[in-house]
Image (tube, rainbow, N blue to C red):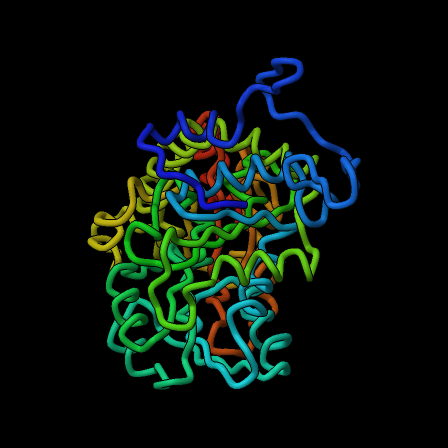
Length: 396
């Protein structure tokens, strides 16, 4: 795929149209699902549109990749079978045994497992560092060995905020690239590449898909990566995507494309509801702390205000009754669904310590036992508040 041209149109216009011209043969306004494995060649090597085998390229996936690149204002987009498949491809493509990575103290458990159990035995070392502290990141860099500063912002599950522009400067000074997991914010709320990041990653399972009906991942590279040794980052990721083969299938690609069309309107509703849920939680006697970057007292609030359109639909809070009450609250709701994942239209509640982050128990990334994580959906917000109030009161 060639670099995505810059498109000056608005976000929702790009979400609906980028990479998605009406079908030339029928005029269909929605990209077809090309449920096909191979393609007829017009003579040996005579490929129509460059398609020969769907692991290498598929028209539905190509439309999704172009749309993702346009939404992140990046050069090239790549769609994968899962968010972790995309992250693993970035690791394999851009690192080699002997290299070193900075990893956040507050990161998705699956990402840490990938570094600790897969990349480390391969020979890629990592240092766990508070990415909220720019000087701590600078101090953790190993000159000549650190190749990637890996960032989530907001982080999962404590909603920490990293200063993307400042970390990009630190990484680039050290000859490293900045890779940002933008899943919690979505392309609508945050544009890491515009702030100096080199690679952006998503679990498209979450807000991009938005309906809890697809598993997928995405990687988008900057239009130009100027860090020496990484100028061909997009080509290397493309090669490894094809060679490793964990690509998004055509139907999954189509589902994510469908989700992206309504991303902006959904995110605004997620944010509206989250802000009201946060206001309720702050006043509840059973809640001891609320984690949300939209709060003026949040340590990353000022940075989030600079680099995010709004503060997102993810909220975490801690309860007075400790782990026992946190677990009980998760099981006492009826409108909120007890489940892992996030970013769907329905509201989800979970206990990170026993669910999504169980793999980091006993490590520097272990999360508070009294923590509850909310993925605030787009239901009527008063129903969400009433349900939480009932659960918190019943478990006190």
